[in-house]
Image 1 (cartoon, rainbow, N blue to C red):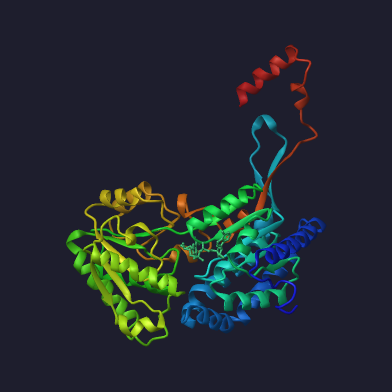
Image 2 (image 1 turned 90 degrees about the horizontal axis):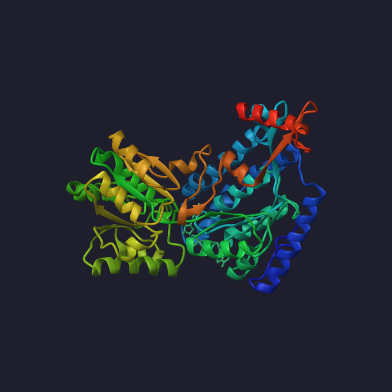
Length: 482
Ligand code: NAD
């Protein structure tokens, strides 16, 4: 089906709303015709996705780069296509096992009945995705929803129009719109989308919009998974070898120019190693991007608005007395909307750079004395999406793990917990609700229906009225075996 026909929408809310309603009705009807798609049918859907991803790596890399101004093809392959492909392939390999009803123990007094959890598709699910990893964050939840046997409607970000158009065209060509459809449009279309009575809605984006999406979904009691943002700390413990940890921090921060939901937002470093830490992160950044003025390896900031926001954050911190270290020539980079890694040493706690999610290549480094100080500082803020801890002192590590609450953690590196499909990925508190990836994704988009299979030898009639002495004896026996 050509991309400019059935699923194409104008940004106008009424057009968008009409098209959302049309596709939703179509998908709901298809769901009612076949509420439990077979294993083979789900595998066919996952195969279509795998083929689409494998055949279009270059196409996606080019579209994403056009949307950003510049995004390295290799960064797109590593951080979007490979992670996505590994997730879809894993879903394919595990699907038979995930779909199997799971027996749960039945208490003695209910035997010989049997009890099971039987995964069931929810129906029609909605996915709203952001611009920062526009393919991975759209198609990874879609794959989980398809594996779980659902119909899927996807609303990608308006800030990546090239990528959204490519995804739209490819998905239209590969899938029937009753199975998987893309709705292209702006914020107003997003609002109408969030008000649709989906059987589940997964939103990836900012915390402020996530709250609005949850409010819109609540009107229909649509359950939501919210994959949000926040300020993810990296703690360098006194036991860490600074030389070994800083490359990982520089890489985690500079990948996609810091426009990564789980990028280390700020660093807590031992006070006596503050300068050493800053110098080592700067050296690591130079080693990663030696020709930062000219390299196509380094990603541009997505829009002028975000570029100005990030510049203003640095200027405010400078005015408030923080020491600023720019790792690269700002003058040469600005015309390409690229920002060099900018270290902000010890900014005040109420500076924007410490209050807002940074979402760019700016890295505050704060002196933090003890493990307790680090824990107290983190617990003063909202619960982060990710936390990174570097060091060799396992006792200090475990204290941080037990006394802070974050969506996920990587120890002695950054980012990796996201790529491990067997670990559920999601936030907690203001950084999100629910999780997906691997089996967690399948379960997010399934109803794990509890089913009690009564035995024909059951004696439950003994509990029915009339309540006689016989019942009293039965009750005293049950009390003993409970
Ligand atoms: P955003 O919240 O501005 O937009 C996300 C999506 O919501 C877009 O598709 C947008 O069109 C849509 N939208 C905007 N207003 C809407 C409304 N009122 N109702 C319904 N939909 C609406 O986020 P963004 O700027 O695209 O992405 C950056 C944010 O996303 C950062 O905060 C980042 O941390 C977060 N993020 C989180 C994850 C995660 O997995 N937890 C991953 C990537 C990004």
